[in-house]
Length: 379
Image 1 (cartoon, rainbow, N blue to C red):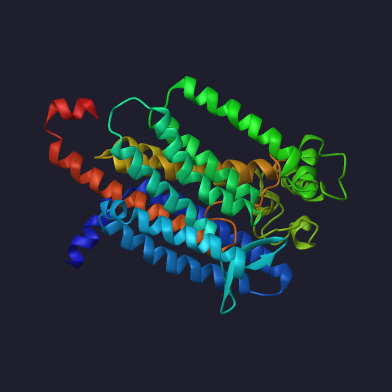
Image 2 (tube, one colour):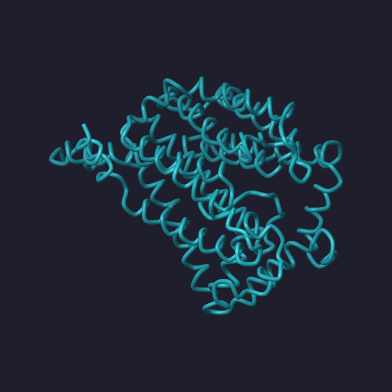
């Protein structure tokens, strides 16, 4: 049995594993730098626990059969919906967002796991749809599945994660074959909903973040302070950076949220352009290999599942890097495998474990049928 597990791990996607390892090492390097200025190694200790626990869980998923997730999709979705509702009642508030359970000194953020469970349930529905054309009924059903966690997340309020869930839903529907006419109608509908939300739903501080994004120099010492300092840190890094632990913006604490939202700026300041390119290349490899394995998937459920996880990594990385460069509003979305945060890190590692489970079976499938010319040409 152990030899079978080792064999399954050997058949996983090595490029994907390498990309995750590089991102984890860069994340630990940035957290080490942050710990120097804080005088505490608590961040490194907690991140190490998350990597250990999440890594073991990812390995367990990689050697197991991903099809088990299809049968457990409703249960996983129900559990995450219950936790998203429960956190609104008994959750802990951090910087105005009630999105965490506090357990024995650790914080559990349910929305990070809701991202994966939502993708699993959507993949089940889209996989059962078969090859028939998309109908408006499909949009209503998948939209209803998505709307519940989005609403509960928005009530925390965690606007960034809520919008991320919507983006992943749209990406999965596009990859599954939704028509351009339907997508155009959806974009128009979202624009109308966004306009109404601006007028009636969004709080003043949320509106201010959007306004600062449009005019970043309008309030450099107030709402625009975070982005302003991040851009200074990125611009001062040069080719090779100031050196790990020698970045003035991060070490002197001018840069806020150094361990989470703006950890990319820490790496840019201390490792320079070379370090940031390494981050971006690793993120690109992570996303591209996820899409590659989705294209090789043996069944529609696996293909939709991996495309959803690939879109999750793509959108989350783009939002975090974009807000560090002042290209997108600050939304509090972490950088996968790099930002500090046990829930986001464990959730991301679980997603990689799922991708590797499919990748191992993709390898088996290609070896089994590699002599069948018609199958090989079709894939």
